[in-house]
Image (tube, rainbow, N blue to C red; front, side, top):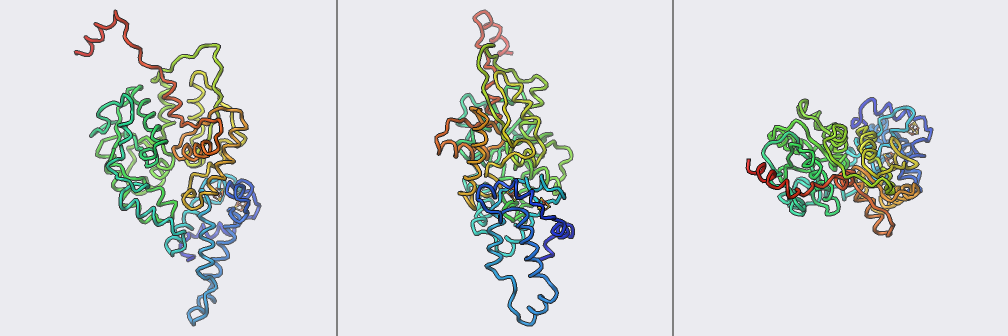
Length: 426
Ligand code: SF4
Ligand code: SF4
């Protein structure tokens, strides 16, 4: 662990930690695993010890003369395993009273561990998949838009050369059967609103977020250059994402590496909130005496804490006819993580499931029949838990809720038919 791998302010942060323990209290990994060692507090202390033991002047001098290193590979491997048993949910940073920039620090620790061969071996598959096939599942990237074939009444020509809005689908939405309903729903919404949009199909590559989380950001440059060029080639003024992690890497990393000043980067919930506000969508009316559908909203870590989008999804839900929102004990800034982030599912599936269990139990306690969220990975994680345990809950993405509520186009009345035919002929 080289001290030079961290900025001066990051090294200062190690000393600034007051050991107050608030990050330990909120950490979903600590609660799910019953292991305080997974907390930011303990990891910071561990990092400080490693840096001291590996970088001290006398230690370096002694090692030059053949003394055994004080930090051996086993100690680094052990620390590496602990650092990767974290979903990068960001709640430690959100709660930290000193304001330590912990999330970037965890990413830099992962980068250093991966660069020196002390990250869990499984993380290497991520790079191999992305470099080999441009998607995280190592599928044929030419099949990235195959979900369109499963859409009933799919509009034709959705992979167009130019459009005002590019919909960046993301790997989970593109390939995972359960999550494919999310891009289908957004397409339905955009068609209903008459938006000028396109998807990029095989020209879209994985955004690269899994590389960031696995400590391999050096492989990002080619991906960023490719995706930005493809968006610009379509002359889009907006890129919309249903995946909060794709949005986050575009906003935080792509904008540093490429000129994106003229392009608006938004999450689908922000775009749909605009459409709802502008009355561009028509919803099916509900009978006045019908019971409201009780839903609870899960703030995905990368959308809420990561991109500060808290209000728009709630505004959409409150505009949907017949829907009533009930909040979970932890919501908004301190929403509990579902266990699906930070590549945790790959590194430690049992811990990821234990985190999903806490999340779903909290949702159940609200009495809601439906968990709504705004992330394909959260939908996947929570649905898997709900189905495996045969719980009577539905998990939906907000786009699916909105698409379900859209008014169906009315069949023309017999007297309107000649008018409709005349319009079609024009
Ligand atoms: S990012 Fe989340 S899971 Fe990781 S240490 Fe912080 S609170 Fe725990
Ligand atoms: S909340 Fe911040 S100051 Fe308190 S123990 Fe955690 S990292 Fe240290």
